[in-house]
Length: 381
Ligand SMILES: *Cc1c(COP(=O)(O)O)cnc(C)c1O
Image 1 (spheres, helix red, strand yellow):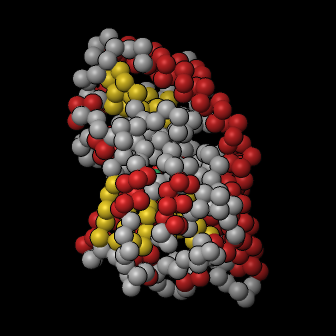
Image 2 (image 1 turned 90 degrees about the vertical axis):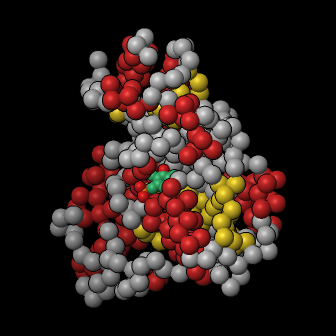
């Protein structure tokens, strides 16, 4: 029997890889310098550690070190990308195009921009969670400044056709921003071959520490300029002031190195486990799988369970098994997931749906335990 409680909610957050912890701990202890202290060795060694991490993040996504801005995570990176572009490019236009299945950190930021005089077009997706590219083409106007499309969806694991979207944006001379929180460190992401101008990264989604992330900002072809959200000492080239979170940044760098070496084989193993889990669960009565089967992350399954309420399933098994109905960020509100509704699920289907998100520490034994637990519950549905 696996150790309980058992964690199958890796899309909400992941545990730190022990190698990440080992790398970052010294920067909480003896090596406490401020990388902005230019006059002494304490500052120099911290600055060198940050430089190395910047290199490691850049390498994972095919960027230059000068294009990486450290932030507190993907929520901040998303805010910085959207608000920063809106403020800087409002002479050119005030129109932003995005999609209905985006994370709240994108959709709510767009709402904020709308209140500040921006215009937002939220495009629908099909029942598989994928966009209609002709609709996108039609939605772009002369005053469009940005297209925002996430790389992979946190609830369903569906991967967006990022390259095709960026080609359309580029053809219209519009910047392209992607929320990469669920993709970076899990699947290959390359800002150049994918045509990305701005990309959000979150360390705690791929075995790094919480409260740290990055925003990739393209410097060439085109050079993207951003207005800062946070003013102050002019850190990070004036785009993000505030003393750098050195331990967090070192941890993020280490997580990038590990991901580069291991994500491919992890994904192969996880796809097999996920497929087994999914096949077993779909044997239960009234179950249904959601999200594009071809274009999706290896470790995520989203399944609805007939007329049952997913929240009540979670209540019954929550002590033993950590699962989620969807986005952890909005699990405080009992509303059905906006992602599933956008894919055309009924309210009943959406509230009966559970997300199983696996990670690199998930074992076959754990998957088997979850299958048996769900079987046991389903006899009582
Ligand atoms: C987790 C997540 C975020 C928020 O990232 P934080 O680093 O926790 O702020 C944003 N977008 C997506 C797609 C996510 O999965």
